[in-house]
Image (cartoon, rainbow, N blue to C red; front, side, top):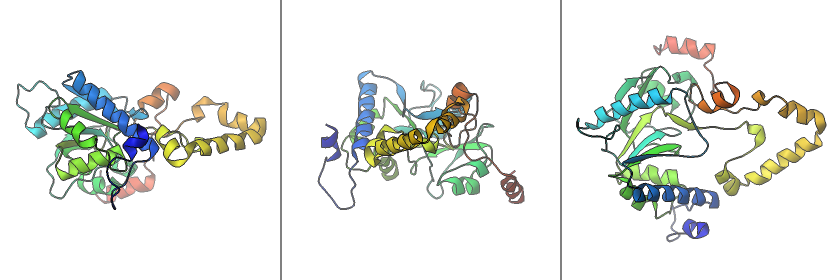
Length: 285
C-alpha cells in the first residue's frame, strides 16, 4: 500500500514523488484525518510523534485561541475556542514567511524566544517584521513542516480530499501548496508553539521517516559499531551520565520533554553577548 501510494499519478516533470518513509508518514496523516471525520469531532490537533512544546503550553494556547478568534472575526456564539473560520490551523512548523502586505494580529507572550535565539529560514523575517516578545496570527501561505496542526469539522473533508492524491515530496509540502494556492484556508501562529525534538547528533538519524528515506538505519548501525570498538571507556563516557544524553528543541524556551526527562530546557541556540548588543543597537529591545 505504501509503495502504491508513493507511485500515485503520472510521472510528470517537476512533480516529486514521496520516498517510502514519507509515503508511510503521509498515510498516517490520512488515517488520522479519516478518524476525525468518522468520530464527528468538532476539531482535532494532530501532532507528529517527536513533537515538543513549552511547559507553558496551556497559557500559550489560551492566548493563541483568543487571537485566532479575533483575527478571523468569530461571532460571539461560535463555540469552537479557536473559531471555525479556517481549514488548517498551523500551530507547529519549522518556519513561515508571510506574503507581502499580510495582515497580522499580534499578542504578547513572555515565553517566545528572542529573535537572536530563533533558528530557521524565517529568522530574518521575524527579526525585521515582528516585535520582540510577541507572536502573530495571520493567513498562512508559507508554513512548512507539520509538527502540529489542527483541523475542524467544517474543513477536514476538504483537507482530506486535497491531500489524498499524493504526488508531492511529502505531506507537509502538499499541505503548504494547498494553503499557498488558496485551495485550503489556513491560519498560522508564528513563531511556532510546537517543534520537533532533535536527539544529539552522535546518535545519527532516529526518525522512522529518515531511516527509510535516507539510510538512517545504516548510519546508526555504523555509529554503534564504532563505539563498540572504542571499548569500555567510550561506552562509559557516553552513557554513564543520563543528563548529558540530551538533544535540543529549537525555538522552544522551556522544553516540556526535557523538563520531564532531564530537568533542563534543551533550548537551541542561546543568545550571545554579541547578539544582545546588536539587538540594543538596532532597537530590538
